[in-house]
Length: 319
Ligand SMILES: [Zn+2]
Image (cartoon, rainbow, N blue to C red):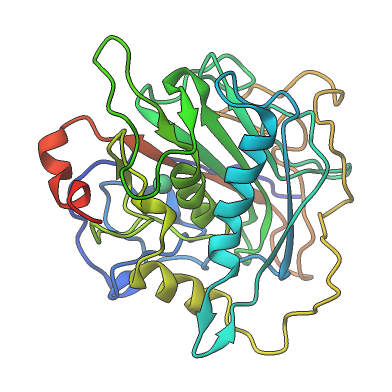
C-alpha cells in the first residue's frame, strides 16, 4: 500500500495573491495540492477540491475551554460562527450544510484515526504548540487542520485550534468592535470573528484576497467584521455546497469510523514528519475507490493577527 502524508502550512499575510481560475471571484478553494494555495501564495488550481461528502457536520468543543471566557460563552460564540455559514442561502435555497454541536470533547490535539473513532474538535492551546511540542506561528490566532483523502479531496476530519496565548478572547460589541487596550495589556479578540473565519477552512474554503471577506487571511486585533460573510464568502460556500436534494432535515451527524470524543486516551502522538502529524494513523489508508491510491493528507490554514495596522485600514473602516 502506498501511503503518504502531505503537510501544508500556510501563514496568512496581507499581500495580494495572483489570481488564477480557481478564484476568479477572489475566493479560493482548498485542493489536494494546496500546500501553497493560501496565505500570500497564489491560489492553486491543481488537484481535487476539498469538500465534505456529507451535509451534516458535527463538532465538539474541548471541555477545558479558554482561560479567558466562561465555557457557555465560548459555546455561544462558536455556535453562532458555524450558524453564520449554515444560514447562507444560494439562489433562495438553503446551503447544503447543517452543523451539529456535540457534547464537549476531551481533545486538544489534531488527529484522524483509521481504524478508530474521531472527533472534529475545537480546542484552545497555551502554549501555542502541537501535541509534539512544535510551535505554531506566533502571530496565528488560530489554525484549522483539515484531513482529506488525497485521491479525491474528500474531507475526513477537521480540527480547529485557537491560540489562547493571544487572548483574552471575548464576545465584543458587534458595532464598536473590541476595546483596543494597550501594548502591555491588549484588549480582547472577538472569538466569534475568529471562529467564523476558521469555520470557512473547516468546510474547505481557502483564503480570499477581498479585504472585507471573512476569509481574508489576517485580522486586526479589534475586528468583529469577520462575523459577517461578504458576497465573496457566500459565493464560495454556494459553489461547494449547493447540491439540491443533498440536505436531509433529519440528518445524523457523521464522523468517519465513528465518534470518539476523547482523543487523548489514544496513546502517545505520532511525531514523525511535519507539523503537526496526527497522533495515530497519520499515513493511514482511508476509504477509497478501487484502483485509487488510498492515502490521506492534511492541510493547515490559519488566521494571523495583523501586525501592521496601517495595512488594515480598509477593514477598520467597515461598519
Ligand atoms: Zn485562514
